[in-house]
Length: 304
Image (cartoon, rainbow, N blue to C red; front, side):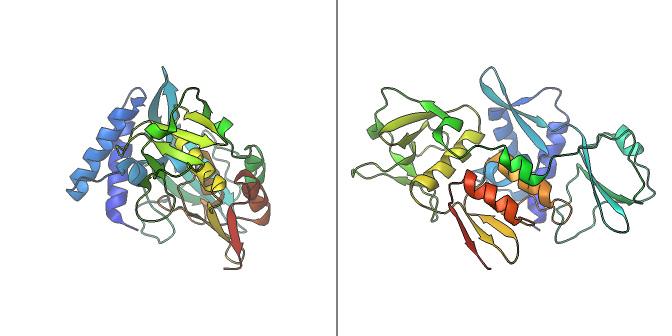
């Protein structure tokens, strides 16, 4: 675990926790850059992708829209539990001090360095007997992972964009590249391939999706760009992820959409609470059936 990453994320979470109303995307981006510089003493590109978006995929932060603009805030307080033969394990997220005082246990597990647990400041863990009910705590009972995955449609332009009339693709100078060091490449003059394009090399320049002679304008939700990147892989016959049947791990080749990452994170949270990873454990055969459907079979499956 990179302690600097955790420190940056703790600064972000602490700052968000002081805000009385949702924060505009532009302001959050500036705060994220400032947190990175305060810890690393360097300016980094794509700091939101590296440090903030993993917090969203793990459910610690919520995304919303206000007057057509993206805004961010801490997720509401939540408590989850999982039973073994001997005890009940608990994880609390974004708990207030009043809620922490209601935890019926003598010892809380905090700041313990473990390879499979990235301990952030807003996370509280404890263990109890099996009969403890956690009265007064905001306990979340999610449907099964399979049921949650069944609720997602097959990836298609309709879920992240709307058709755009009068678009000249020649104006868009770069195309998304899921592989290699550079994620965006200058496009050539050949017949355009289906995929995600952006107007210029500027990080936040306008983007469109091109597919079957149609042009699509991406939605306002930040998550739409992640679905568009998935669609790019599907249309260009590139893998979205790799799955190991023996290890039951799914490793994404690109950043997964927020909600997909969140479902897979919740599925593994009691065995592997690793926020800063694109690899998810505990992915069963039934989960894979739905994931392959969602991603149009662009998951490479193997024994290892």
